Structure formats: structure tokens, C-alpha cells
Image (cartoon, rainbow, N blue to C red; front, side):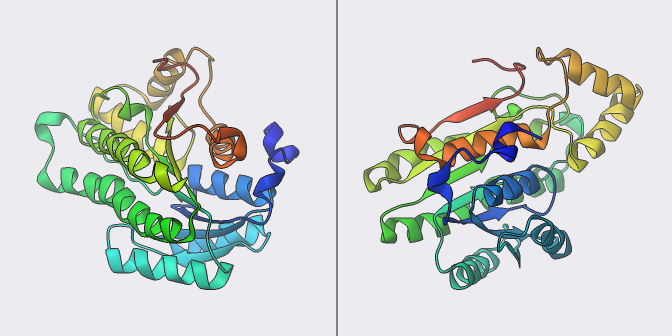
Length: 265
């Protein structure tokens, strides 16, 4: 358990309300739990409503589960309206929902490309826009988008994923500039090799594409990481807490690396 998980360190977050997309599992689940431990009421919005409900029940602190398909504007608007109604407002958006598939770039299909961009790029656009309109009207708010190490350096076998995550960073920077006069901060986190269900699927895909064992893939991930281990979802969640807090009050438009040193620029 991280220090932030054991000891609340951002008392100003207590009583805030947050929507976390893709919050039912993986990084989103860790972020939802970390926010809840700081006294934030969390709406866990996920395409997998059963996973969202399970996570909400586990983390408690008034957390709720909402169905959402971040590719669909009506679904996003409905989820946001339900969060506002149930939580009594919202102060924080964590746009975390994301997907991946893996293939050699020359073998990618139109469907591979469109799927990555529909969730990873369009999903961030829709959720950010709906939240930003609300935050501008109320005069305050904070947005954190989940990008990726693959948003900083092109990842072999993940060209379409990298492209969609580069788009997330470009959008984050542009939106941050537009919302800064309203006092609304917009940042992104860029995780590295994180131990999640998504990574487990990617390890199997990569092993097959490279014709090596899954164990070799994982050892390669660790070898690329100066801090010498795979990343935990909580490593990302703690940085998200910081970005939501007043201690990050002069940070906006940033893509914060949380990679264990894989990427340092």
C-alpha cells in the first residue's frame, strides 16, 4: 500500500466529487480507491457496469457506479447528468477509460485503428468537453486524462494505440490553454508498464507476435525500467491525487511521466 493510501495527505480533497471513467478495474480502480480514501465521493463510470458496482462496493465512502460508453455523446451526457444528480455536483474528472489491441503496423485493419481512436481519443474529447462546460459554468474544476508512455514515444506493435494517446496529449495541452483563464486545470498522466488486466492481454499478444514467451516479454519490460520493477496501478493513482490537489495549483497542460524512468524527457 502506498503512503498516500495509508495516510490521507490532501485534506482539501475531502468533500469533493469526482467522475472516473474506466474506474471499474486496473488504473481506474486504483484512482477511484485513492480518491475515496481522501474523502472524495466518486462516481465510477464504466462500460462494464458490474465491475463498476463491485469497485464502488469495495471502496465505499459513498461511491456510486454508472454505466457509460465514452464513444457515445448521449451516453457520456447521461452519465454526467446522473453523477451531478446523485453526488450533488462534480469538481473533478478523471478521463481514464482506454483500450488497446496489438498488431504490426502494416497489418493493422481499419477496425483496429478506429477502435483505438473511438475510445482513447474520442472518449477523452467527449468526457472532457461535457465536464469542461460544467466546470466553466461553475467557475472551478480539475481534469486529469490518462495518456501513456506510448504518448511520448512510439511503441512497436502499438502504433495505433500510440497515435491515439499522442492525440490525448495534444488535446490536453490545447484544452489547458483554453480553460486556464477560467481557473480550470487540465493535465495528463503517462503510465509505463503497469500490472493490469490490460497488460496481461498485451503480454500474451506481444509474445505471440514476437514469438517469445510471456515471461520474456515481462522481463524485457522490467529491463527497460530503471527502477527495476513493473509499475503498480497505485503508482499512477498517487500522482493523480497530487494533480487534483492544491499542491499542483500551478500545473496545467502537463503530461506527467509515471514510468519508473523508462522515459525521462
